[in-house]
Length: 359
Image 1 (tube, rainbow, N blue to C red):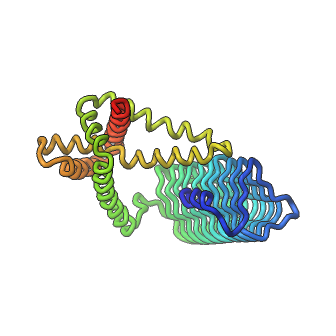
Image 2: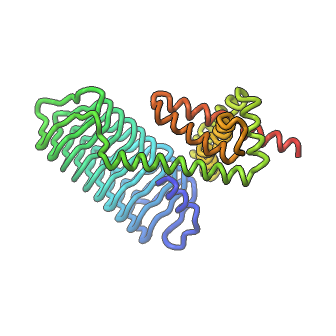
Image 3: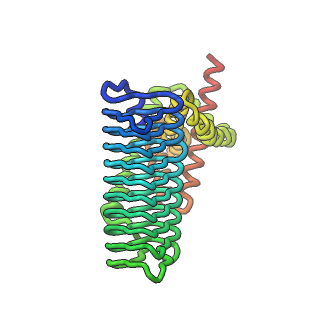
């Protein structure tokens, strides 16, 4: 969703209203007869938008009405106290809903307070959610804490650490949840369907899709590694040597490169001029997360092959064994990935810097 928003904001838009400024306000009583594409510190819709809204901002407020969908990437808070006739899809820090959403609500936020109404489904991924309003159909969440004190029209499917049903909760379907402890349920809660706590939430098809994605990601890593080694031949060869000669230094440099870009991008999102720079920094950082382990994995494969077979064979063997180790040892998978990523990324950076100095 975030990539789509960035692309929509960056493309020349021939249909709709494109507004880029510090504060973008549709005043009360005004009617915008087209889609709104907005980039600014504050986007406030107090009037009416007869179309869709696409926003990248530090804060989004909707106290008027939107007759289409809302898609937003927000660095702070989203407040919807008005009416949205279509669907709402947002990524933000906080989400407050006191108005109404006619269609679905999909949110990736740290904290959400849904006191209004949603006409269809709610899909939420985040840290904490409080639902005291109404949901027309299903409620599907993955969060740390969930509190329900409103009406859910159909089923609740949740993966949580703690789940609480308040005295005003009314569930017209089933409740299926995965949690580390039993849910806290008030005495007068109404649940029309089954109330089940299970240890496995994902269905068989989801497991199959997950495994397919894992295999495809391994294939993508190998292809990307071969392409990078061929395109940046000198840098890739030097990076593999850096892993062998200076693994500790490469790892420390890589850790710094993993931490610095998000810290740099966060304040840039708060300024209009800094948003494109922050987006570019994050895109490069995401690319580094994919390609970073390649030098370390290649060096590992070289050790396994004892120097035979060439760099391509070393990359393939090292990648297969590396991913296999993460699959067989899930408890230390994150550590195995982080070590390869930090050392490889640091080796890339060090190799590029030394080659720059030589030339």
